[in-house]
Image (cartoon, rainbow, N blue to C red; front, top):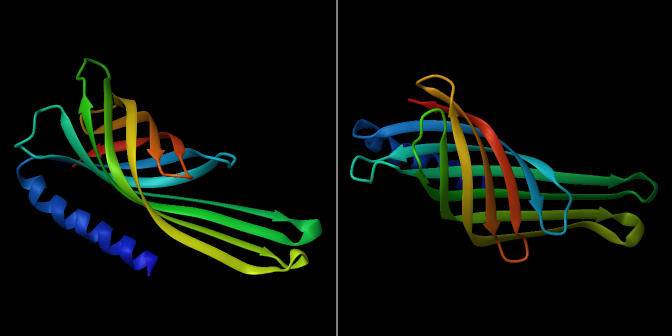
Length: 180
């Protein structure tokens, strides 16, 4: 169910991006993340996002529909305990770019929906495949810098904070951006 909802959301983002592409700038980003969630050690995550600049917006404003994912698992052999936590996030951010020669710093924010899931299996403690899934809304703040490599390809580095009640996350994102 969750996978089909995320797939449908990604298709919707692509369909919405197609008409915007004709009259505006359009790009795609591939991201890797180091995710630091409240009360958890850091883990790695992945994301893909579109960058849209409709012609009707101010020149330096960019809209970014994003799909993010991370998963963390632990296994304690002597006791047979296994735990898995994951987060699938669908968000919409906007950023303001301060255009400069050589690099482009930016700040922004947005909103998101987090599909959080936890699973614990600890037979020695009498817990057999206990699961908990919930959906939470969030707002986010971000800041970063884009470094052009060519006219169509850039590297970027950013810091993004997701305010999710009881599951706050700070992410260090880096990746490649391609103008289409």
